[in-house]
Image 1 (cartoon, rainbow, N blue to C red):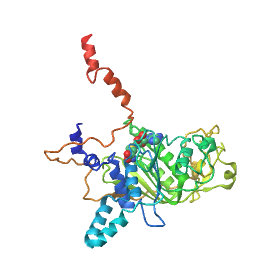
Image 2 (cartoon, protein in one colour):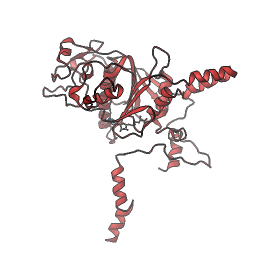
Image 3 (cartoon, rainbow, N blue to C red):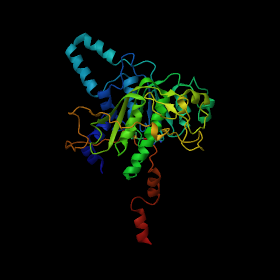
Image 4 (cartoon, rainbow, N blue to C red):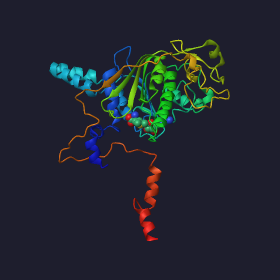
Length: 388
Ligand SMILES: C[S@@+](CC[C@H](N)C(=O)[O-])C[C@H]1O[C@@H](n2cnc3c(N)ncnc32)[C@H](O)[C@@H]1O
């Protein structure tokens, strides 16, 4: 598909380039925020510490940086603020603008991705796999470099067993695997990313904090909802207008984090425990998850499990799961007047297509492109065969 053809078929792709976002996903976060006030700025709920998982190329981090560090507003909020200013006029207008654009204090944003990410001002970026246990100490150290000596980074054996001293207000995860086209497999891998993100979120969120993550609404997604409900007061499913209606993609928006209660006898075993029976009780009294960050072990249900196992959330036994599955509210986000992600729009005749703001730094197909170039471009191989 040509650049301008894509501009026509995907209004958010075009808008992202026009508004200097690295990816069209920026609009998804902005529209979810419009509905759920993710970036609340009034005390005591003020959001200043955020973790952005699976963040490359970085459009969500851009939104975080511009809202929290620079004090900008977007979407409906920006329109409402502009309208209010217009109604007030004069000196008051100037005064209010200053208040609205006031950057927040002590902002800390950590972004993680498997792919390298072009740096963004004010954001700590880490290249790491969120499903790997070694990412836990890396994240903790990035959040609070002074609290953790450098010797702890990269080592799971030194994972702190205490809760994080300066927890975060919001954890985001827009993680998506490279899609294979086999729906069940893609949905399964996606759910593993979600569990890894939740595992990290449980370790670093403050009580009352929020967690937003991409999901694909597959056959058994209601089980995931029920699991999320054990550690959050409120769980909703959001479908931003910039996410194609034809796609199974949606976002779980979890509010009111309730840190799971660690069973006393288990706590004494510490994080080095390799017990297969590590049990953490959720607020609902449900057997819940194992997480080294709050005193459980990143264990598997196999007795041979060790702390080198990939992070995964383990339900301790099927008998402890809720009897009936729970269905969260499904909420469409973004104004109805917003662009329709599934529609094609005519472009003006003099339209000039822009280049993407941030081309991928190390895409998985990079090697294939290099090899094709070595072979003489797209038709190189054919030429060779004909010439033989
Ligand atoms: C849809 S993109 C994220 C877009 C991003 N939110 C933005 O606004 O630019 C999904 C990202 O998930 C990352 N990802 C997939 N598996 C991962 C893993 N195990 N650990 C870290 N990142 C992962 C991919 O590298 C990819 O950059």
